[in-house]
Amino acid sequence: MSEVAPVRPLPWLASRWRELVRLADSGRLPHALLFSGPHGVGKPSLAEALIARTLCAAPGEFACGRCHACQMLAAGYHPDLLRVAPEEGKRQIRIAPIREVNGFVAQTAQQGGYRVIVISPAEAMNVAASNALLKSLEEPGGRTLFLLLSDIPSHLLPTIRSRCQHWSLAPPAEADCLGWLAERLGGEEDARFWLQAAGGLPLRALELAEPDARGLRQQLHETFDALVRGAEPVAEAARLDRQSIDAILWYGIAWLEDLIRLGLSGGTEELRNPDLLPLYRQAVKNGRVRDWFRLLDYAREQRRLLAEGGNPNPQLVLEAWLVRWSALLRS
Image 1 (spheres, helix red, strand yellow):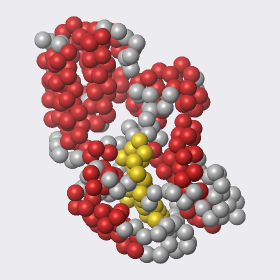
Image 2 (image 1 turned 45 degrees about the vertical axis):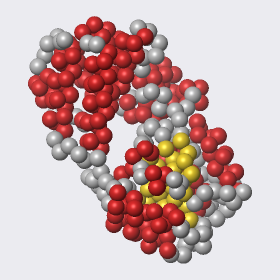
Image 3 (image 1 turned 120 degrees about the vertical axis):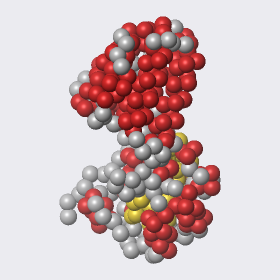
Image 4 (image 1 turned 90 degrees about the vertical axis):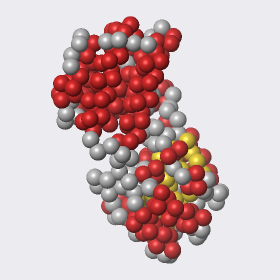
């Protein structure tokens, strides 16, 4: 039987990993962990390393990669691991898969070790699913580990959060991730640029550097340039018809935050997108900071509603978003 490569967390999470290993080796690992942090910080890598080590028959610092449990996990199936996520094409985790969790927890582990349940993103559980999970979180039985992953832990029910040990993962220091990112992007200059644009989140930086994401960023830059020159916002929205509204709003929020920084301080050192400074200067000249704050609130709220399935027509959201931008740019 061939040895599989050990599952390791990303390098900037090494100190958090050592804490988890110490807890596990001393028998003090909680039965429920909530890993939270912004998308792109690397929560899944920490979770996957812990899953592998917890199910491994002979763990060291990491899972051994040789035992039957490691082989099964590498093959994509382990009978004592249950993953819960929204169904394909859905945004919510409903009650049915949580009922499966409750049944799974009631069973004996087939490999004689831990049972591990992973719920991601945990905030996708609706109220009924969250309430159904509470009993298992309160009385999980021995050798059971719940791992909940969340981008926005405040969207979880307080009763869920209170039953988990909360591990909040912050964006890493540049020195801890720049080398890793430079290796994947082909150079330190590109790595530094995309890391800055991503707000210090290395995995988000990788996503932004992908050709499609670069293309969308350039298209949005051209859209806002056109709005500054007086273009019709509904027509500009039509040109963005096939693009992800979530990604468009994400870029818009990042750019608005830059605009507000520039409007409040006048400095450019803290800008995430310094290449957009000419556009920002024109926008700051035309609009007031309090108006940009209102637009930022609107964008965040629309993104939240879209994530929860609360708005059935993304194109109308995009049109309304660009109309608001246009009105401020022309004020």
